[in-house]
Structures are given as structure tokens and as C-alpha cells.
Length: 141
Image (cartoon, helix red, strand yellow):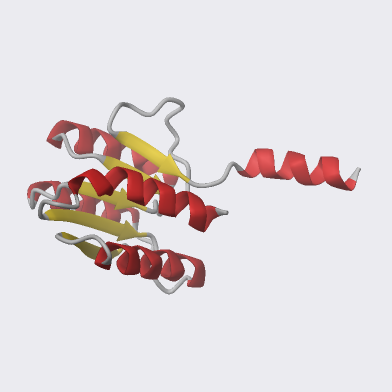
């Protein structure tokens, strides 16, 4: 399910840009995590199907400061969009502010940002664990 959501979001966000050169910065919390490595591999494979799209992957190595620096570096490099799998969701407000200030679209993946309402140009792709748990409990009851 998450893979399908990621596919739809990735396609919807970047398909209109596919005819131009598009540079996307991607910060993954830890690439030695099997699931996160699969997300990275899927994104890389899908990007290869979109002419002109290049992804720059960075491994935050579970470091919040490292990830904040990566997002700031992406904005300084003039990336067309940023995708982040947050190390710690408490740092997402700062990342959102940085991306908004630079007018760069930002998509969080797999870990929901702490902000209750995301501003325009910022999105989240992932499941709702609370809803999933409620559905599982109803099924078991």
C-alpha cells in the first residue's frame, strides 16, 4: 500500500516537470534500513523512467543536524523539489520553513511531520498508523 501511495505521489508531483530538467534532493533517515533502502531504490528506478529527472540521494545516518544541513544544502543548490524521510519528526517544522522560504516543494515520506496542517507546497506520503490500528482491532473484535 505504501509503495502504491509513493508511486502515485511521486508521479503526480513530478510528471508535469518531466519534460524539463528537474533536480530533486532526497534525504533518507538511514539507508541501512531495509524498508528505507527499498523506498530509495524504488524512487531511483521510477526517476529513470522520467526523462530529465535526476535525484540526489543523501543519507542522514540517523542524525537530525545532518538532515537539517542536507535540506539547507538542497535549497542552496537550487533543487526543484525536496523529498525527506525524517530522522525525527520534531525537526520537520524547521525543514518546512527552510523549503517554504526557498519556495521549493517538499514531500515528507513515511513519517508524518508534527505540523497539524501542512502549508501549500508541502505534502506527506505514508500511512496513518492510528487508523491502521483501529481497522485491525475492529477486524479482530
